[in-house]
Length: 388
Image (cartoon, rainbow, N blue to C red; front, top):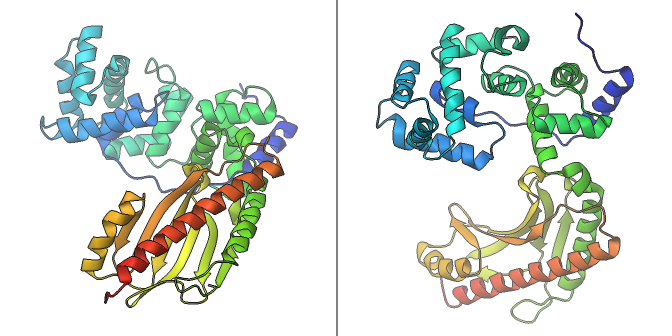
């Protein structure tokens, strides 16, 4: 029987909403066969930090110490524990250092399934994944594992697909106003991806972050353009009356990055002293950068100063305690850099008025100028009478 598809109108709505997403293009890091097997039973409907911690526990505390490197060795290690709640809790503690015993139950069902389809190692898993069909090869075969787990496994094996998890389902429901069956969403996104020139893997990770962070309803990117312009104006006004350490007016050039990047990208503004704002021996401040992190990292503001060359080891070692005490992270490779966080996230709720943006921008401007002044004092004092 032919599967029902989205109507033309529904497909159009989903296509437009998907094309308007701020795409994340990431390379998935390869994992070992056993890590992939364990992640399959762990990494769904569970907090990511818990999954990462469990997998790291197995890798660092169990795998090498107990010589568990093959499918058979993993099965043998699991068989040591009785198939009961008590036994599964003990197994969860052994493998992962936690009490997620129901995931051990899944592992008991998943491990025998794999050899039944000819899978016992990474090459055979990838070969199976490339030709696997959910209805034919997986549905109903492993109790507790459904279509989202199947497609997530395929994704990690390098197959071009999208996993219809809660976030993809929520995206479809938010856009179309009703819950769409998982298989219909997978079919729709397979058709959408080539139309917008993005891979299914890109759509998968983008929708995951976008829905998990509630970006569609908790953030208005257009207001970020307004906020940055207000901030730039405020900083310009303040710096126009600033003096250097000798009391001479110091000139600055402020460059705001391209507006289209301010919505979602890692970007911001650059402050460049047009006169000698700071000199510490032979080292001069070359650039100050105020930047938001990329949207899926929370758009956190940070301030970075970069000099034209590195400090001497002696001067750097004297400077580190002063700056770290004020929250700066410093490095001194080919050049000196110092970075500190400034304020909270730049995700802007839709209820924020322009007056609120102005107040917010003014407060951040004060914080930025104070940080620059404090940095100037630290480096200027360090440079008095020093050859660096």
